Length: 494
Image 1: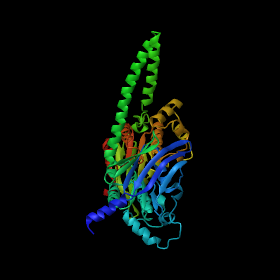
Image 2: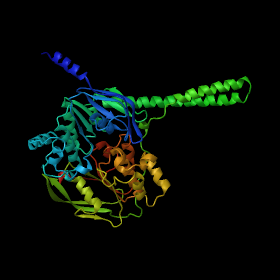
Image 3: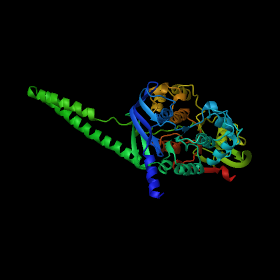
Image 4: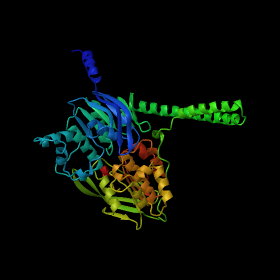
């Protein structure tokens, strides 16, 4: 068979639509997510699903898998096709599972060759993991690999990946990228990592949080992002022109109305035209909003040494080894903690934040602002308002609500429990909480995970201006470059 014939057959197979939304309406509680939304996904394609934090991207995955059902409209997935989802985070109620239990939990029937299958799939994601080790003992990057492996072990026809690069180091992202380029089945990915997406994306599904519809684009990720930006700019310029014309006609209508007689009829017709023009004005899309520029106040009256660290634990071959270091942080010092997934970065940050690290000395009375990558510093059963009110003990109601609004946390979100928020919204709550706490030492573990790409430059600018001491873990070089780092500690080199 010739290559041309093979390619034609593959092209015909890829023309087959295997997932279709038709006029789908879906509400989550009282929040409208989709309003008569359409989409189609063809066999063998690799598609990005993009949209604002909290728009409902993960909800679309649950509609595809059948976990959720639409209020109206229809969702068709070709019969006989299997679907697997690599979620953003391991469910909290599964953190006590062993690796073995985690993989076994996805199979409805007893699997007797579990051990070799787990070993094989762990090799695919480049992870060495004892099967009896509990999930909570793995680093964030290792948990991300486990989530991917759990989806891949099912050998699905349709693979859904929800923020798969979160917590992954450079090596992990490179490996995942190659895997997806070589992957021959259908794949839909939610991610804010532009370079990662642009390496394999063939099209974009854009969930518009304003219209509640799904717009479909072909082409690579960056081309689509630029196309959407251009469209929003066209809408903005159209609004500027319309508003000028509306104001001009209002001025004329007011002038003619004062003249009386026939001029009043002219004024009335002009008002009718004004109403028509006002209907043409497009409300600015929420996607065009980034969080407001913000400032993280530093604890007052801090002088001299804030933190001294004389030893750290490094994990190699699942064994913890003590290493001597000499780190001293004062005001405006920023330590970048680096090293591959699983070497012990997150564990060190946890111990520093709770005062349990060996060889650690934090000056008395120093308040710590701690951004955890799993958001476990937040109480998922509390409302957003209660969480921020607890942090804002010295600030008033107006300061709290102003801070929340800057992070796009409106009145409805303030009433919501932390546990029902999207991961991106939890991240914004965590930053708002830190601003209200006024810390002297800021500890940040992968603060760009789950965060919309529009917000990241604003966050980097705020961190760069922070006056206290800071310890940062981040695998995003472009983000780190925007912050003046004074010291780097590479755990790999110890």
